Amino acid sequence: MHQINTYGSYHFGSPLDLTNQQLKQLIRYFNLPKDTVNSALGGRTSITVAQLEGIGSVVIKYYRRGGAIRYLIKKWYFKFGKTRSQIEYELLQKVRNLGINVPEPVAFAYRGHLFYQCWLVTREIKDHQTLVQISCSNEEQARMVMKEVVKQVSMLIKNKFLHVDLHPGNVIVDNQNKVYLLDFDKGGVFPRGKNALRSRYLRRWNRAIQKHGLPEMLSEVNNFNYL
Image (cartoon, rainbow, N blue to C red; front, side, top):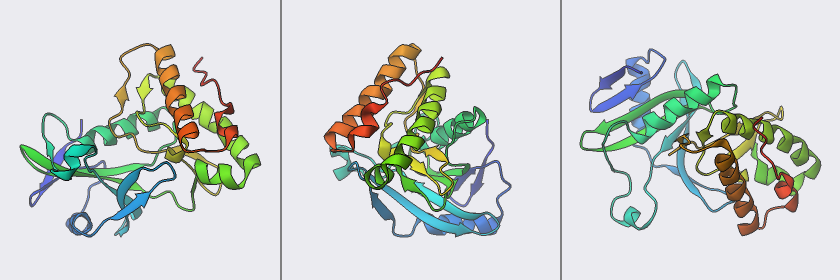
């Protein structure tokens, strides 16, 4: 359970003792124009990469609605329990504790009461490429990386953690060939058995490869073994 501190109209949760200067910096970034990243799989994620005093380079994620409702309400959510940013922040902490490679969570924040906006702050993973980019340019490296991807996803299955949008665009690799899984929004503990979770991961993974015409070698993984 994280203590949530208030600064102005914003509420923050973090394992760090954030200074007033750092909080002011974050709030300023929250209100700057956002960079919308178009992924190789057609997704759109609003982020800002920023330098935070005393912490270094961080990625600030902005939560936006999808579907038809986004044309009416883009960035406000009804608050019932924890915010989306807090849920994702806590999930990142849990899977990191299991040895799964994900971006290090720095803080979550929100403002509002009945309706809210929210943000997630993680440390930036520098000099990275997505698995999609690697598979299109270096098949040998992609095959090597896929072995680690299988290990990472197998640990998720073993511990029954659901990543709702697992596909090659949400896998990044740094310049040391270390693999990271991204975007655990809406994830959580899977309510059914491990075989059902494994099947769900395989369906989502292979559907993305087929839909977006990605290299066939990415579909050669036919088993996320959790044993």
